[in-house]
Amino acid sequence: MFSKPIFKQSIQANWKLWVIITFVAAMILSAFTVTFDAEGFAAIASAAEGTRFSNILSTMTSLLGSLENFYKLIAVILGIVYVVFTANNLVVNEVDSGSMAYTLSTPIKRSSVIFTKSIFLVLSIVLMYGIIGSTGLVAAQLKYQNVTGYTITDDVRAAAEALNQDEGYISERMYLILENDHAMREAAAVRNMDTEAYTIYLESVINDRSYEEAAAVITDERWDIYKDDEDMEDEDIEITAEELAADPTMLLLSNDALVTGAKVTGLSVNEYQQFINNEIVSLEQETEVAVKEEKTPNEEGTEATAQPATQPTVMVSEDNADILMQLVIESSAKALNMETDQVADKIALIKDPVALEAAMVATDLTEQQIITMANNGMVSSAKAVDEALEFDAEAYIWLSVGLLLLILALSSISFFASTLFNRTGLALAIGGGIPFTFFIITMVQQLMDTSENLEYLTITTLFDTEAILTGGDFGWGLVALGGITFVLYAASNVIFTKKDLPL
Image (tube, rainbow, N blue to C red; front, side, top):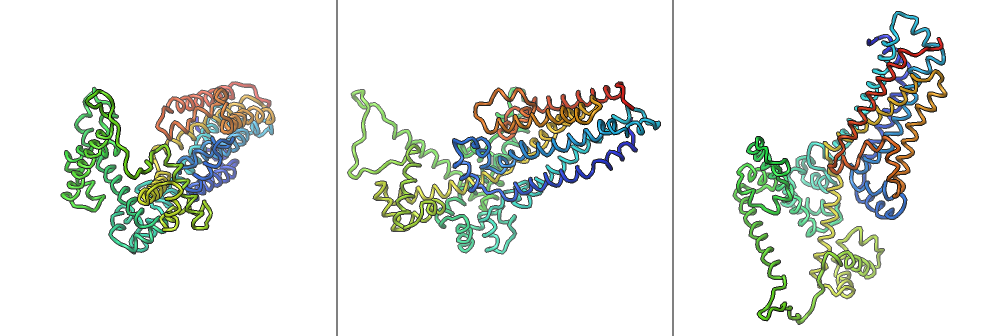
């Protein structure tokens, strides 16, 4: 069935377009990856909120979200260009030009010719998108090292330079930054934070990572225990970092988890165990305070009310925190004779004595409340950037697989048209028009909020990037794309083998 001469001839006739498309797509994906700016894209997405572009830009606040737009739009259109012209060049163009007559005059069977050409198109697409996907992984690893380890952010780079250590070494031992004042100042400055806020941020990151690593160890231990228990669901066995932070007592039951958590924090096992005990006590105290603050019935059966304080203070709740923060920023900017955006970009300026005084007058907040808000704002912004740069390798691989299956499905449409018709113009109109129409529908869906019904008019919706990134159900869509590919390629082989050709 397979013919080496036909395969070589197919390569010679189409390798230039393959190289161009592969190179352009790989370079664009690399550019998307290495130039990603979490803070900048977040600002753009916020500014575009409520516009026709909000659907596209809202996902660009994370690295994978930014790459999602490449996978849904740019990679698809480049793939369509390749498959449309290559599919037509492989079959109908040779029929239309008469060169197919020469090919079929050789001892090579017609079935071998079409089978080999279909294999060439499939393999070339697989190789193309394998290279493109691998390029994205390499770019992310070289830029952030977030594929195989913790993300290397700008503050880690600054600290590593100050400590004269490897960036990867410091990213895995962030406690070393806490132990060096010079490294602290350099790293904090890069993050537009003062050392007080940066200390809070570092301690939070280190603690989160210790819980994350310990949770993975506990989950592995639980898998060994419950792997044969049919009554236990996967989500019941798995322990997340959030669950462990809410109930650290689980950590005390695993010596391996304690050792792993201690390694992340730079503490000895005994010191880390004491830290966990302190966390447990702190959580219990917070629970007791929350219970006491709830209103309870008094002896007469009515609810007791709190007595007014001699100096009332403004309570900063989640509902009004954003409003108060904006007032603090605006009053601080006015007091410092600066633009509001300048203060918003460097919240540490709020702690300036002049800014603090103005903010206290404008909001009726205490100095400590304003400082706490400033610290929380800086820490939240820094952690949001870290979260945006996180790289879920599994989700990325599924994005790549899904894109590959979509392009294969679109190629099967073009290849089918190329075998069905004997004239290049008609084959291009059908084999190229349908995939391009699918792409245009996808664009319309991105730009419009009321276009849900359009999803039934295109197979591109079977490649559900949102479900892949959020852990939703996307498997059946990929299976459907694979089914379309198999059916149309098989039909193409049958049609070409049995049809009458104008030879």
